[in-house]
Structure formats: C-alpha cells, structure tokens
Image 1: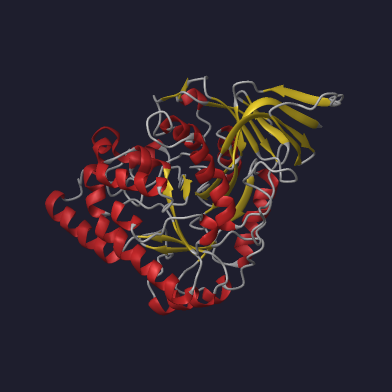
Image 2 (image 1 turned 30 degrees about the vertical axis):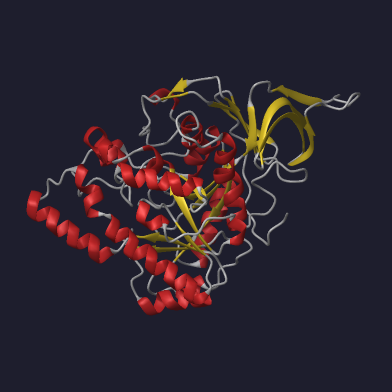
Amino acid sequence: MRTLIKDATIINEGLRYKGSLLIGGERIERIFPYHLPPGIDLSGVRVIEAENKYLIPGVIDDQVHFREPGLTHKGDIMTESRAAVAGGVTSYMDMPNTIPQTVTQALLEEKYQRATEVSAANYSFFMGVTNDNLEEVLKTDPATVCGIKVFLGSSTGDMLVNNQEVLAELFRQTPMLVAAHCEDETIIQRNIQSAREKFGEQVPFTWHPLIRNEEACYASSSRAVELAEKYGTRLHVFHLSTARETGLFRPGPVREKKITAEVCVHHLWFSDEDYQEMGSRIKWNPAIKGVSDREGLWNALMLDQLDVIATDHAPHTLSEKASSYFRAPSGGPLVQHSLVAMLEMTLHRRITPEKVVQKMCHAPADLFRITERGYLREGYYADLVLVDPGQPFTVAPDNILYKCGWSPFEGVTFRHSVTHTFVNGALAYENGTLDETVRGRRLLFGPFRS
C-alpha cells in the first residue's frame, strides 16, 4: 500500500518545514515541501493527516542489550524491539555479552537468524572480542555487521580484554569500526576495596560514581584513543560519562572523523543527586556522575565533540535490581522513552528538535555508514516516525512495553508522544497499537552516500 503522510512538520537535515511524504512499498517515493502539487492522484493511497506533528527519520540506537540468547527472563529480541518501535526506534545494534557470548561467526549468525524471525525493527549485532578469539573476529564482514565490540572495563564473563598484545593487533588489523566500553578495571577494583573497607557489603548506591570514577573512565578512554591514533583505526567510544573525557574528541561533522564518541540519555538526564531517591534503578556502567560532568557532556554534545545519542538499553528485573549494591546488576531499560526524553529536553535545554534528529538519526547512519537509512530522502528506506508535540503522557506500568515491566522514567510526564512508526514502509505502530506482523531487516553498511 502507498501511504501519504500529509501536512506534517518535517524535521530533517537541519531544516524544519511543512510538507508531505509519499511512501511506495519499502521506500520514500516523494517528498513534497510545503504544498502538494495540484491534481496529484491519491486514488488507492492511504492518507495520514499529520497537521501539527513532527515527521522525522526513524531513530537508530547504536547500543542496546536485548538479552537474547540466555538472559531472556529480562528481555528478548521480540519484546524489546517492539518497545523500541513504540518509542520511534526503527533500527538498533545489539551487544555481544549474552549467554553464550557472541564471539564466533556461527553464534553471530544465529542471532541474525533469530532477529529475522521476530524483530519488529531493523537490526545489527556486534561481534565480541576476548583475549582468545582475534582470528575469529577478523573474519567479520564489514558489509553486513555493524562493528567489533571490545570491553576495556568490567564485563560479563571473560569479555574483559586486558591482553595488550591482542588489543594492539585488533586495532592494527581490523578494517572495521571498533566500539569500546572504556573503564579501567585496576582502578575500579582498588575503589571497590576502599568501599568495602568502609561499608562492608552494604555500600550505598551513592558510591557508585566514586567506585567507577572519572579516573577509571579517562584512563581507559585515553588509551583507546591512543591506540586508534597509532594504527589509524575507526574507533567509537560508547557512553561517555565524564566532562574530562570529552576533551579527547574533536568537534565537527561525524563524516570527517575516524574517532567518535557517544553519550547516553541517562547521562544527560540524571546526576549523582538522583541516587538517593532512585538507587539501583539508575545504576549503570559507566556510572551516572556529578552535575558538572552532566553539564560537560551537554556542552560537548552541542559542540559536536560527542556524535551520537543512544541508550545502552540493558533491562534487568525489578527483583534483581532490589538487591544490595554489589548484587544489583548495572543497566536499565530505555529504548521506548529515549526519543521523547530527548524531545522533552528541547523544552529545558538549548538543544533543538533538529539537533536531536541529527544526533539520534543522521549521525548513527553516517558513523556506521548504514545503507540508505537515517534520513528523509527520496529512494531511502521509509523508516519514519510521527511525533505529536502536544500530546503529553505519563510513564506508568500499564504503558511500559519492556519485558522487565519497569522504567527509570516512571511517573515522568513527557509532553511529546510517538503516534506512528514506519519500518521499511510498513506501519508498525499507530496510536498505542503494534502491528505484530511487521519485521525489520538486517542493516547493511557501505561507503558514504551524499
């Protein structure tokens, strides 16, 4: 079915204007700035009236943990991709620290096969690195896999890569983008020992940013950047959490960079002042830190030192989160609310909806060189989102779609609502209702297209 989205406020490539967009099959067929041409034939075309709504490209989230395989009591590809689509996220890139870990080509392809069967959004999966699988990692196809994920800090199982020779060879040999979680394990363990000496096992959650502190983050991030500069590697540093780290990254368009950085919604929204009330619900790695760090991240984002806004969506059950500090796992669910949270911040910060679209839609497509997605352009895949900026809603258990059933934003009223989400031209979500038959596609990667 062809679909016309009529009289929307189109936000795309730094511009905002009233216009209409025609979907033909999986693709954007025509974009009509300002007015439909007279005499256009709309017979057989479904028309969606979008007056006073934003029309933007689908959000691309470059860092999620959908927990499949092996941890599906927390979330799975089917449930979390549907939550993503309801939040305007049409493409995602999933992490390898599952059970089993995604550290062989066979296990990587098993995840792709599973996503083909159940994912409501478009998908890609990172290949994971260990101290022992470099030969397997180097077999990864850069045209069909988003990148190589390396944990340079505490991680699940044996995925902490601390063999310096392996790291050097990875950065030297791979033609692919290397995405890194950067925290220094030696510093973290030293801080854990100090916390235990003071509190025993009852460490307060307010100590999380003191244990996983600025020193641990900067020491690891700076080493990763040094390796990338030495070997000319494409490096993307995930979830920056400190103002100091932002100085490692240069401002400018993402297309002109080989070394890039991401910031996550929770590091822009919360600060260490929120641990007292929220405790384990905002326990992430790297830790949410002080107000000055949050402000530093905002400044770097606006100066284009930070290139992408993502979620690090990492659900756990409430019973798991209800444990003491050392037992409560790090991470929380975010994909259903990332876009509306960032649009909410346009009302309080100097960031504009155009900048939100740049950082959540355009920049991930450019950084990962995703084929024909991330923009509203004729001929591109019709991954589209309609947002009503005048339709507030309050996050509550009855409208949360995560399998874990909770959100760190519970009780928050957002003044924007996602009303429609299209995935490859198919209407996957409309006014609270998901089309369970819609399936995403495997993302493909290639050279930049202008």
